[in-house]
Length: 300
Ligand SMILES: [Zn+2]
Image 1 (tube, rainbow, N blue to C red):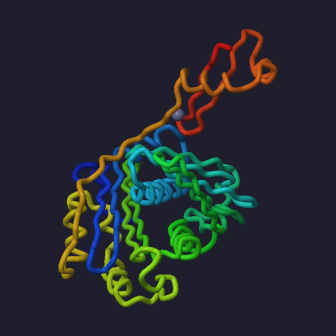
Image 2: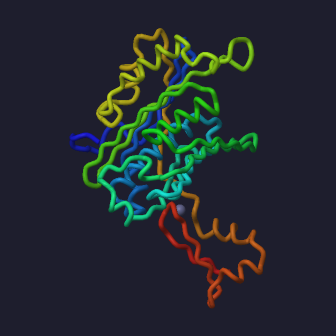
Image 3: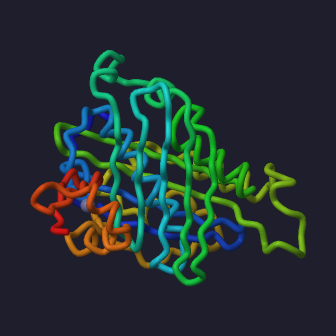
C-alpha cells in the first residue's frame, strides 16, 4: 500500500516478457488496473481479502506468462485449515485471469486490519498446476503455505520443486475502489539438462547473484505507477546489461468460461440418477460459478 492517489490510466493490464541472454535469465512484469477492478467487483470482499486476491492474481499471471503456447493454463490453489480462508483459486489462460477466495468474514473481522499469512490461512498448502495445451500434459507442484507472503511461498516452490532460483516482487496500491497491483518475476534457467553443472547445485551462481541484486532494487511504487511504462521499468533495472530482449506485451483481461452451454455440457457427463437428485421440482439444476458469484439455472 502506498499513500499516493491511485489513477487508473497509463500502462495497465499488460504483461511484458523479457530475457537477459548473457545471464541465462528470463523475466516477466505486469500491472493490473481495471481488470483487477472487474474481478473484485464480482465479489464484496473486505479489504484484506481483496489484497490477498490481488497478490494471488499477480502471481498467477506472472507464472502463467511463463507458459508456452498461449492456450496453456496455470492454476494457483490455496487449501487451508484453521485460518480465515479455506480455499482460494485463481487461473490464467491466454491473458485471461479469474479468481475467488472462500473465507469466514466473521473470523476476519476479529483480526487486526492487516492480518498476517498464518492468520489468514492457518496451516495449508499452495498447489500450482501447469496444463500444457499442446502435449496434453499436466503437472502440479505443492508447497506449504508458510513464510511472509504468497510470493515467498511461490519463490520457495521454484527453488525446491523446480530448482530454479526465482525472485518475485509484488506491490499493491488501493484507494477506495481503485486498485492497482503490479509484479516482477525474474528467474535463472539452466542451460539445458546436460552440458553443464545443474544450477541448483549452485544457487549462489554469480550471474544470478548479479541479476537478482539489480531486480531487488525495484521500488514498490515503480510496480504500481501506471505513468512508468513496464518497458522503461525493465530498462531502468537492467540497462547495464549488454543485451536485454523485450517481447511484445500480452494484454490481460478478466475471463471466465462459465455459461449456460458450458454447464449443460458438464451436467451431461453426470449419470441420469445423479442429475435427478440435483434438480428441483421444475427440472431445474442450479449451478454456481464461484469466480463470478453468479448462479445458472440449467433445465435438465
Ligand atoms: Zn464464471
